[in-house]
Every structure is written in structure tokens, then in C-alpha cells.
Image 1 (tube, rainbow, N blue to C red):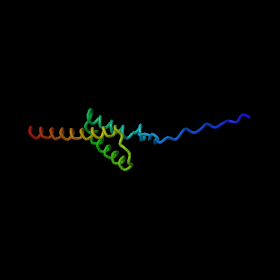
Image 2 (image 1 turned 135 degrees about the vertical axis):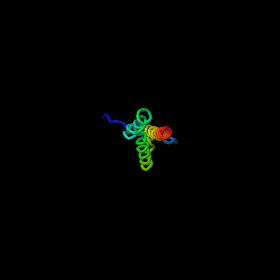
Image 3 (image 1 turned 180 degrees about the vertical axis):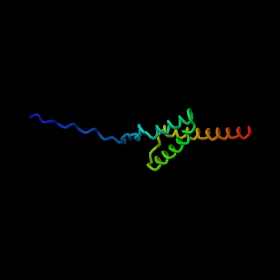
Length: 103
């Protein structure tokens, strides 16, 4: 008669269970796209910067509606989009001013 004896349950203590950290999205294609557009807008072609700004604003609004924190790459791309757009506008204004003064 080999009867298996069940193991006793672990003792219940006065402590609360350790809460799990919030789940983070690791592979967010939209965040990577916004970041790449922001980098391209700063480094290579300033015309990409407004698109990074617009997509970043849309992404942040979507995250706010879904009540999830935005990805850090998307936030960085959004900021780069703003900086790149400001640089683009200042460059266009400078070129127009030089053309007007030269005429």
C-alpha cells in the first residue's frame, strides 16, 4: 500500500504578495517608425521631421486614450520631430531673408 501523502501548503504569512511590474510593450513598430523619422529629420533631411512630430502626437494621443504609457522611442522621436521642424522653419526663414536682402 503505497499511498502518496500530499505535501502541506506553504504557510500563509501576514505579508502581501509582491506585485508584478506593469507589462511593457517591447516591440512597438509605431514607436520605432517615429524614432527613425525623428533621427532622419535631424540628421539627413529636415522634411522628415514634421512627419515624426505628427505621428508622435497621434501615438501619444492613442496611448492616452488606451491608458498605457508611451514607449520611450516614440517620445524621443516626437521630441526630435519638434526640434527638426523648428530647425526646418528657421532654415526656410533664413533662406528667404537672404534672398530678399540680396535682391
